[in-house]
Length: 324
Image (cartoon, rainbow, N blue to C red; front, side):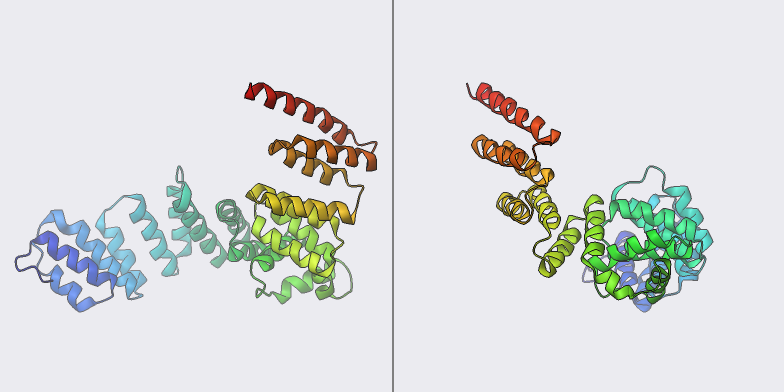
């Protein structure tokens, strides 16, 4: 504002700044100073739409966005967003379906979220589920996304998947609560206390495995630790924690978790295999041999461990060749 001599570009920039702040008086003041020229129409309409959106007048925002004639992805997405906020969910959904092809990354996530929310508002549960599933693939650790999947599945009468997504959501945000989903799940498994079911180590473990398989290691880790706090002898939880720590590059954590798993239960070939593979990756072949011997001793019929024994020999041979 302190520039003594301003041109049309300056006035448009200032109008845009004040529109973003919701200051209609100053926005109008600077727009009035812009020359009446067709080349500025698109920008002026966009600024007026921005001001209307900021003011919560979504119908007016939608009108100006459409009048701007801007056919960029950002403009079309904003039209869909304005339509959604103006309670014109079908239009919002239709626009997203037209513009999403070839869109990736954060823009695709935004499109899926908006389309899912629009379908949700329309109670079109099947369509909502499809969009939220797409969103989950790029935003897996979002409790609201998982919760919306649970609600959509519930309304499609798919209580098993509803419960699965509900448990994922609660693992990410323990404050989430839906009595309808819990009651319906309770009825589906027969009479009993659903709280007791949701608090059981078995349910926690199954949910944690599901989270881990879905790439949500941090949420799975929290559940495994919760299981082990209740039952430190749960060897499979220790084993899966080891896999999470190993994938994260926490070698000490992985090693200690595998040790704990073996300490609690000696006859699980998978744990020995995971530990041996860890040592092979670290090129610590003496430790790999030590643990393969112990593993085969406790699991003499394990084909996996017998094959892994040969893998140690081959890996050590290749390492020696590479260092010559």
